[in-house]
Image 1 (cartoon, rainbow, N blue to C red):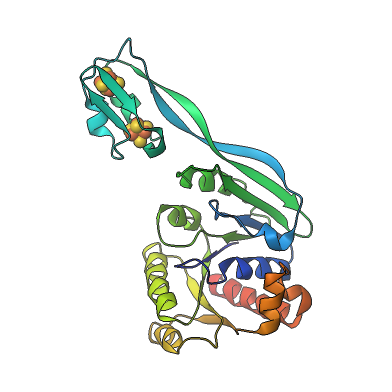
Image 2: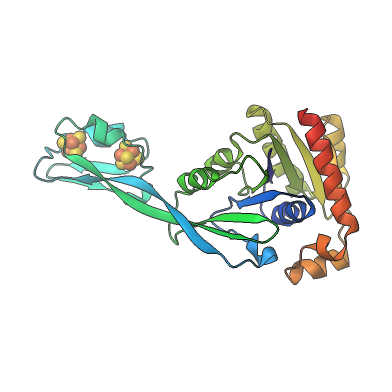
Length: 276
Ligand code: SF4
Ligand code: SF4
């Protein structure tokens, strides 16, 4: 079973939930798909080794063959290739590696060169942990997330720490998951972003529930919204000094407050039952 832990905005406690849930369960694989800023390992403190990388095919123009007809430039949805009289240029940082320009070139003037965009690293103790790490300055996180997800082990309970937001990398991370936990905080900003994330899960037909983090700050509107929309609130984590202290020391709070392990296990049972 693959469970995604997502949030409409950053800083809601998504990684905290993903890590604490992973530690609370047996036979778990945790994948940090937040490849621009993978910080789950700050809590796990595992020694990581590089196990692979991800690349995209970037077009290379053969100036001997190119007639500067402009077909490639017209066909590229991302404005990553431009042709002017006497010169055809590739803007590598805009290229999505879709290969369309190569197919369209009537002169066979385009070849492809693999360009590494990031690495995949692995470490383990009780949990098998993998993360994608996007190269500095790289913008194409989606192919790296896809590559990371090829390592999903279906014999385990798989937990994905999804990037924040609702853009393409989130859609890539969510595709094929069995359930999504949306982590939010009870503030107007949190609610606004939660609504976007809810819409995304509904569009992608992914069953989902909500965890409210820092529950005793803000207002009741998030709970009211969930009740009106029949969205299960799986757990409410209070703004608690002890939890905050453990967090700031990089310690998963279930390790020091074992009663929370039981609560995360209960969530897992709820999710499993929903999928039966
Ligand atoms: S389609 Fe081919 S020939 Fe035409 S500008 Fe592009 S690379 Fe050059
Ligand atoms: S590979 Fe795709 S995105 Fe990149 S330049 Fe060609 S058409 Fe554009």
